Image 1: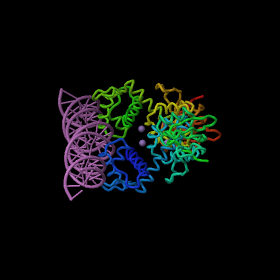
Image 2 (image 1 turned 120 degrees about the vertical axis):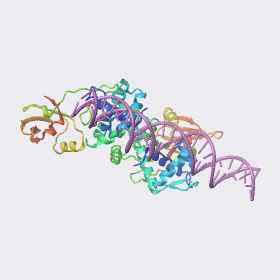
Image 3 (image 1 turned 90 degrees about the vertical axis):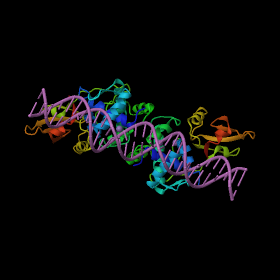
Image 4 (image 1 turned 180 degrees about the horizontal axis):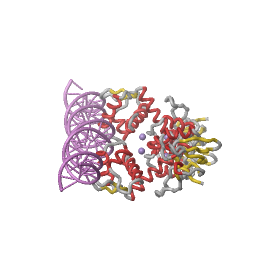
Length: 218
Length: 218
DNA sequence: ATATTTTTTTAGATAAATCTAAAAAAATAA
DNA sequence: TTATTTTTTTAGATTTATCTAAAAAAATAT
Ligand SMILES: [Mn+2]
Ligand SMILES: [Mn+2]
Ligand SMILES: [Mn+2]
Ligand SMILES: [Mn+2]
């Protein structure tokens, strides 16, 4: 239906739209896609011709309903494959993104639905990100950044904001994983670092770490 | 490493090499790939530059050792994915080829090895075709076409020569599947059709059918 | 051995996706 | 409000994979 490149642009625009109520700018897309602004302009024209984006010269783009649905479909595939890689093939969560980046472009509706069934219809991927349903609806879950909690608050780790390999490996090394219970024991005013209880151990983590971990509070 | 197109050419040449001891001709490749001879010539030059084929103008091509190993790797992926689709996702054997045709181009050695392990290192795909090992070796199995058997001979169905959807669906409809025991009861001289015993039933099949079914004789 | 047919290659064009450099428009600063 | 800077678009190239039409080479037939 659409080329890998077109699909990657749709996904990028979809993600960027969440942060700007205006149209998404050419430069923002270029940055996200690691490409040049002129290449973006070319692609926007093409996506516009295909009625996937609303594009007016110099005014950025928004996805059309069709564009949104298409983007959600690609994100659905990406995240389902990530679940597969972690749950069935025993990959660790820092290894799957690159591979899912390729698998998301495999075209077969039947494959997606069979994969979804095989995985027992997961609602979230290995990084805690929501998996849209077939019709494009994203499951919601209220979650707070660990850095927002007060001393004494506690919750269960349900997601990461930064999904970089280095961050995920850091979490592994320190025993932090989705499903783990975390309680804030102390906050250091000087640098906003936190002392937390994780299982039966106590851990000190920097503000940067805490501001990339999502918890579901108790 | 290589483009999807390059990989598809390598696979085509690999398959064609089995039938001609000479180099594979440009036209044969064009036929196999459903493309034009001029496109083939262009690609052969490129593959030759990359040392994947031995190409001399007007004399056809053969794969280099490197080309053979690369082709075997793609066939390995194709067939492992077919096993996955049938065994794990419950696809039927007539639906998997098209999807595997895409999946075979996913680039990740680790993925292939994890998939292989997950599937318990299968030696043959859902159509009975051998799955090369990581180093490019194809498992052998002696098999005979059902059409070659004499009256009274019997064997187990281990593969199909024609893998077209229509043939596979015909086999499904008649209860013929890999692993089934078949015995030749009678041969009709006029059209070489066979009367066979399949489980507890008796079936009449045309020569065309019999000449596309591989058995391992008892 | 020459003529004819078939196969293969070359020449030149097209479409997709990218790039650099220059021009145009919009945003910001003076 | 005018000048400067930033953003975006356009113009023109490049690469990859394909095609058609024509030329060249090889194979086949007379
Ligand atoms: Mn992608
Ligand atoms: Mn993810
Ligand atoms: Mn393929
Ligand atoms: Mn197969």
